[in-house]
Image (tube, rainbow, N blue to C red; front, top):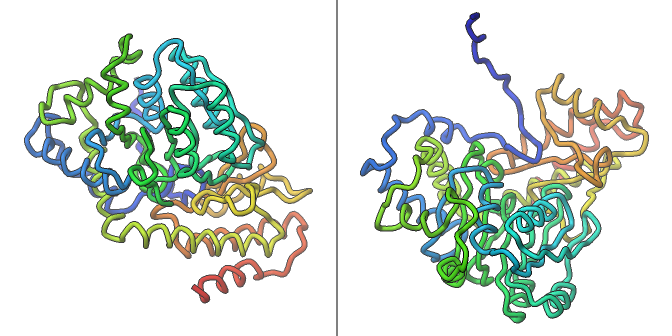
Length: 392
């Protein structure tokens, strides 16, 4: 049989919805020597990684760790541990990932009530309070940063309303973590999950999660076994806890990568990291406005790290994306679901959230839009972004 061709992936600037550009220090960390998954060094690293994740989530939760799997595995881990067959569950759906949470909950046997908003909009507290009073759910699930729409959902008042109804709250922070504040303890979040490939600037493959004591009590008091052996939090607690009971072979070098990624964020400082994402978002937004391109999400509720923007009328959206990739090496994302063919999704996440990428994308968009006959003043977008940076 012929040998496989040499591995030679192209160099890209990843400005889509994820994965994001990987920090060079993270890539270097992945090349460190592999040790065993029960090696004393790795067990110490697990402890330190948990401490770092607690700082990112701003929590003291004992059960804060990284699921061996992508953010979708984190979602499934949270849902299947907290939900039993027949449990009433409310899931807030205003995009792809709320709908996915519904699917996972239904597969776990929950009686799911979908609370829906138009794509790009966010939920009001009263909506959730009313449905929780009617359904009396065990769990309410909601997405904080809806990657399919760029909508930024306020969480704290909703968590309070959910608790007033006697339910637990589960929050998807896959895109949020590391880009905007996620205050697990201050907001009273019972369970959260995230992913490594967004604002943590790490390859996909691990899913940071955190369960508070109320959530872990729900796991311990289940009447049925957790649907998934691999994602059973009670078993994972024995692996990540002081007992160190073998459960599975963890992805050692991905753990190195996540450890380094968390270290980089903490060195910068969380508040400085959030401010950087916000600044680059505002610069990009100003530059796009100069090209007649507007954000698709509700005004005042737009994510700084994931910009879903409306494709101008008459523009071939797929050709712009393909030309950005072919001629400039820039990846941006297409719209999904209700936004398919209507938006571009532009990520400025983690290591990718920097002025050089904003200027690069705006200059490339100017050239490609001009080739499609779009009228605007050449150089206007870069100048508009520059004004934001100058005024910071």
